[in-house]
Length: 446
Image (cartoon, rainbow, N blue to C red; front, side, top):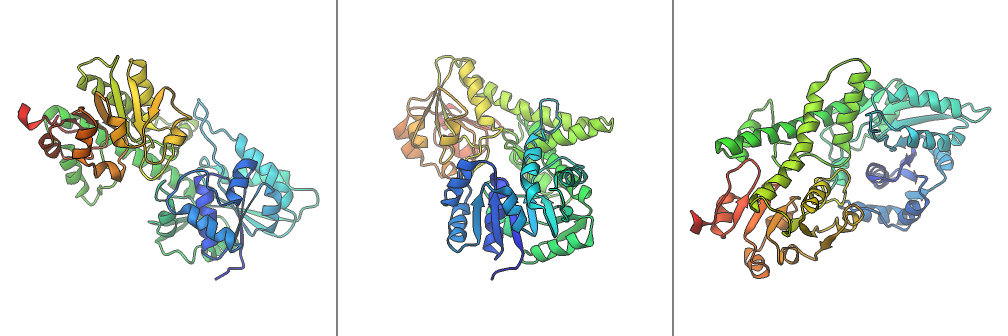
């Protein structure tokens, strides 16, 4: 069923494409606009330039029925729209401050489309806290001469997990809608009326802070369980059972308590840095954020050391089979990915890398060099001295041990995602190193 509201979604990344395609599938006329001509041309052909489960099918369907369009004419998209979603990120600079260059560029492209009527600009991506007032001020300055347009700002932070973004769009845990006017509130309530989820209405700046606080807290939780995993290894405990016991406490919950290589991607690292910069701006010492980031970076170094120890302290001349390159399954995103730093570290110590990922090898080739990419986990393992698991892809967990043993004589596995039960690995004849658990030795060596 078509809706009278017209939407513009500005940006060309994960959030913009999922937001635009999913709203189009709900019956809204959507124009996705961006300044990257090559990417927009590909999208207009139905070619999504990254992998996201279910997204390409929606894009092709909504292009075919005329509900979704891609263009580089940002001003025209804004002119026709009632609601404009701003999905342009402001990545942190080396000093932690946000790089507002991309935002300023898109504001200049938007402004000519703001001639008359009412336009609601909705922050959808992770812009810094306190962006709402700044966005409105900058946009008003750029309005064309004689404009009578009424500009309003809102914030509806996204909580989309890469690899599950389409599902999360339609089935969110909650909707946070930040507005400063009744008109904006009514418009967004109409827009989101087709999605059933607990809803919290706030002002704009509170919505911004909720998003940053959420990601920073999740990052802290991951770093906490990884620190506990180190203790678990020292005392001979099983981090899986420790995490299960923690998660049974309703005040804690079991989510984000999987020990491993730490968090990656773009959202959690960016928000930890952004929130830390905000604290510094107000002369606060947010040491918890600093510790969270330090622990996370150390997890990658520690995994390299773990592989080295498993190889007797000598990596020079060793062949390492890397299973998994993306920072999480069901995506090809390689941004701030543990695998790149781990591969660099192994290569710097003289190791040769053979790697396999079901989806991310194309993106990985732009990040790492001198890596031989394989067509399967079994091919990657051929001639390997050690197998290192970096991503918890379902196909890895469904490993055919007989096929693996035929493909390679390697019986040493270092698992950064705890995919297997140590007992099972021992029964299969492998020496198995995992995170937060004792080393499992082949049964015949016990």
